[in-house]
Length: 288
Image (tube, rainbow, N blue to C red; front, side):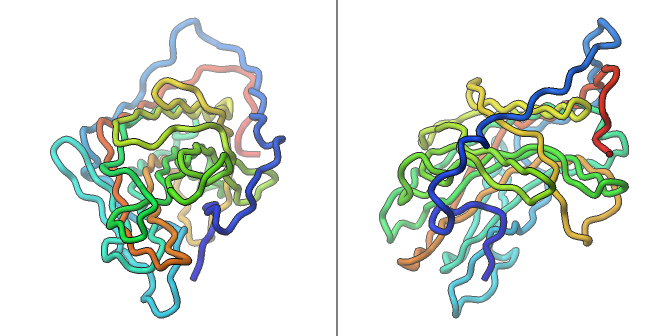
C-alpha cells in the first residue's frame, strides 16, 4: 500500500503551524511598457475532451485487494461537462484520478498563466457506510515542469476536503479548502486557507501563476484564498521538456476502518487557460 504527498486526516496531525499561513512576499518589479501584457495563447472548452487521464500518487489498498490501476478510474465526457470518477469497481481502496492538459513549450516559464473552470459534486457526501457515492477530495492545480535545467515543477494547487467523517477546521476536514506549500526543496504539504461548504451547486475556481514574479492567486466564486508559489522536485523518470500543465483531480474516500466501497464523482465544465506575456525589468530568474 502507499499514500504519498496528499494529506489524509486519518493519517496526519490535526493542525499545521500558523507560520505556514503567511504567503511568500511578492518580488518587486517594474513594468517596461505601459501597454497591458499581450495575450499570447488562449485555450478553452466546454468539457475536458482531449485531456489525459493518469493515476495519481494518493493510493491505498486493503490487504487482499488487487493493486489500484487505471481500470479503477475514468473521465467521461458529456456535451456540457466532463465527469471524473474514482474507485469504479467499488473496492476497498483509495483511488486517485488526475485529468490534465499538457502543453510542451520552451517559453512557458515566461508567461502569466490564468486558468478557470466550474466544478460541482453530483451528490452530497454523507456518513452512510453503505452509500454508493462518497468522497475524500477534489483538487486542481497549474504547473510548469522545467525538465531541461532545474528539474523542478513550478506552480500552485488547491484541495477541497470532502470526507464527511472528518469535522473541524484541520486540513482534510469536510469543506476545508487547502493550498499546497513547500519549503527548502521538500515535496510539500497542504495548509488550511478557508472553507467552501460542500453542496451540489456549480462553483468556479480561478488560478493565476505569474512565473516571472513567482506569485500566485486563487479565487473560489470570486472570493480570494491564500496560495504559495511552489517548486517541487520530481522523480528522475520525468522528461527533459518544459511543459505547462493544467490539472483537475479527485480522490475516492479512504475506506478504513469500516471497509467503505464508495465511488467518487465530480463534474467539470467551461474551462479556460490564458497565457499573457509579462513585461517586467530586473526580475530574478526562477532558474538559479
